[in-house]
Image (cartoon, rainbow, N blue to C red; front, side):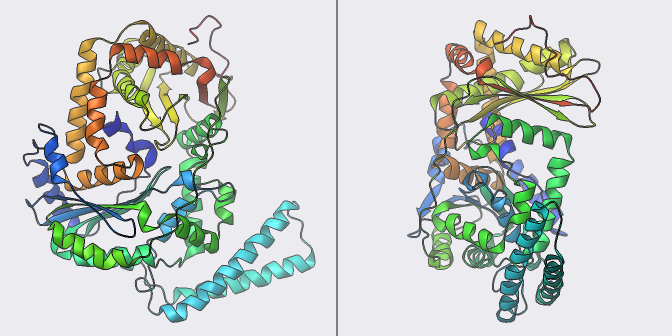
Length: 538
């Protein structure tokens, strides 16, 4: 369902809590957690009335909700920018820029930017030339002439010298330390296919500090320690994708399901692309996509909306409006036949099954949310009851109604880990039986009622904290164009009927619209073709 699963494909979660403020932050959250939050959805118009919206002349959207129970404000800045906006050959730019955004500005992160800048400029030039020469040699199989080796060695020496010079001006982690000294907690960021997000919670009387730091970061980022951070991202890719069985399985599955659309490209980028990214390309991507018109700032907590608007106007309002970003023009062609792929890894088997479906805003998208909940929401869901408890075919099984994003047509996916000695083929056949049941038998009214009850519970849980509400407001403003989607989607889900479920399952869950990826152990018999000929093929 939207509030349970939709953040999973979008966000790369690495929570960071700063120093000794962690206890204070947890205590604050605990207090907020136990407050009376009945106003949220016992009477949903209350939330609509509490959200104050303001738009700056440069296009920046501000959303505010007052909560004065504690002197804390949670802030989420969400850009409608992610992996979906990248081009072939420059994949991973959005994720790399997220890393670089913590390296500071002309004022933060440096002891003397005027002296640092010419060194950074030369470092970018030398690094770009060095990368190109090394790629040229690699393209020839690694054979280099004496002159080429001499040129590369000279560039490497100059590159290391410039890095050493630049490091003398770096004040490491200064942004985080500034927030820490003023009680800020939860400083973090994430990049997904659809959005890039920055979040922080801090004492409400430190809002001017936040505005100064973040408006400076939006207007004047400096790509210091670029090559060092590029190496960090490459190591992250090795850890999470190349050397992770599940990471590699999902990467292979998604790139197989999408032939043309950028949803098929991993958010972290392809390894060769990461190693070829340059400071110039990263800066160009920032200027093209991270203008204030692409940003939503949600603030929830102990704020005065009138004063907050004035503060943001004085700081963020000075940032010039950016030209409209390049439009997204690539549309994924209709799939005309099942696609199957294996991933060999020294790990236990696993399987991912996906079907193409519409994205956010399409009427059938809400039906898929209901199907997702019926099949895998909780221990009483159909897939868990049948495959895990009754047949004991799988250790775990689940579904997701919006992989890997929502701004464009996406995938409804099933994931499962077989329980030995059962095979991925047996699990796959059992999933298809449950799909056939959806087509054949109307979903009982009690199941639909449970879906709605769980939706309300998930929604309240997601919005009861300041940070949760700020996150949801900014997120749906960015991906749906209107934060009110939080409220209207609930009513749309409530209107879904058993007939809608049957119609959608029959229309989309077809073999020709299906992609299957199986994780197999090296040296074992192949499992992709092991499904009996007489098994159900919806």
